[in-house]
Image (tube, rainbow, N blue to C red; front, side, top):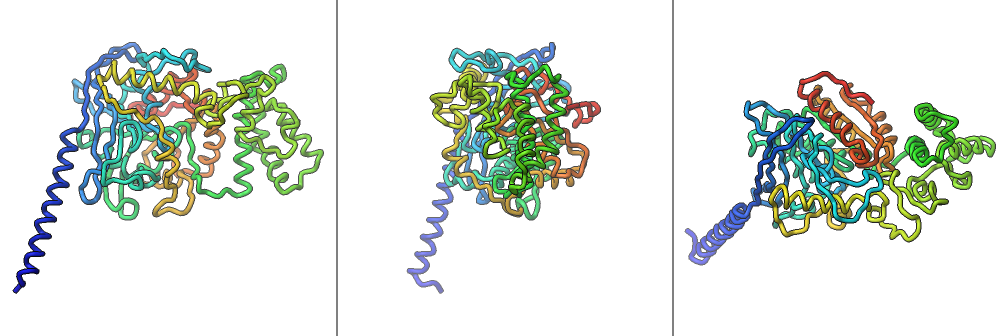
Length: 515
């Protein structure tokens, strides 16, 4: 028999545990009761035809293994009116960072509305800014869901959730997989063709996320069984920052940058155009980069390149890039940031890393890699102002909290790059290869910008080439634009290509995207 004190203690702790459980449940119930939800109806013309749709902005709660709410993920869904009950594709859209909201793709060539930048290149960053209908939106072929990962936009952690539950490669993939699963259930879209679009770090996210969506014994420990029809990535970067490059890989990386530098030099008339037409120039630069320049970098790194051989290479580099011979006094490698400072130095201008067609005065820079970048510093204010206009004038959303466009301090700087169940520092193409093997009919569309010095097209091409994808369903295309390759008069071309890709993957048309 239990003695009285022991019986009292057991009874006390039982009631106390029940009390705590009730309190926790009550807290979650209060959170759910305050769940944000906004819905409006609209009509827009896309490709000359009117289209009725519903815009829904709301939060979905994520839970831990103890079934406790630990985060709120806010998203914006645009759903076409579907009178015939057709099975429509759905596209989940992310930007990158890590630590960025989806604002950039949300206000570009994909969604029903977009920011109007005047002009599209070297635009003003002073108000007023305009929000305009996007007649090239993808809403005619697919429903669209713009997702702000935890800690970005209006999404946030809820106690007992912690930053380490979300701010890492695998943690982020798991949280986004849980969100997508809940969205599909809530909207009864399990049988819809499914697509992911990711920009910048988003290209890494959409490489890892399919594994979390499928699930399994080793990676997530649970089986979701969600597969994809297509993946679109832009501003593509698929190398892990933890990966230690070999001497050859470093030289190959440096050589692959040359075509981007040469295109920028051509844009600013730093190339003698009397000697070339544009296509011939690009072919010559690419051939030189892949052979002579790569070999010279490898030999020079071993300090075995003769002065005469080095002089020949430098002459070619000067011809192709518009740089002076003095630039190559210590190395044949051209760093993007040094190129950005040097190309127009005689004009006292610095060009943008995110889009080298943008420029600002070279002097008096605050040296912030984003705020002082001639591209990012110019178009960020327009995006943020137009987004607030979207919330108020179109979606009837009056949330007084700041919308976290990008959070480096709390997310990017704390990001956990090390992975579970993977070797140290793999390329994200490893994850993509696993998914392509699992889903033989999956197609991947990889896009890059010709004037992107932040995630250059050559880097992405190299990574894709080394990946040896086990399928012929990977398409690579380069656009005459920057990191945000839908800006600078390429928005319609990009949206048309993605529209075709969605139709291809949904078995509507044959493959016809050409580089």
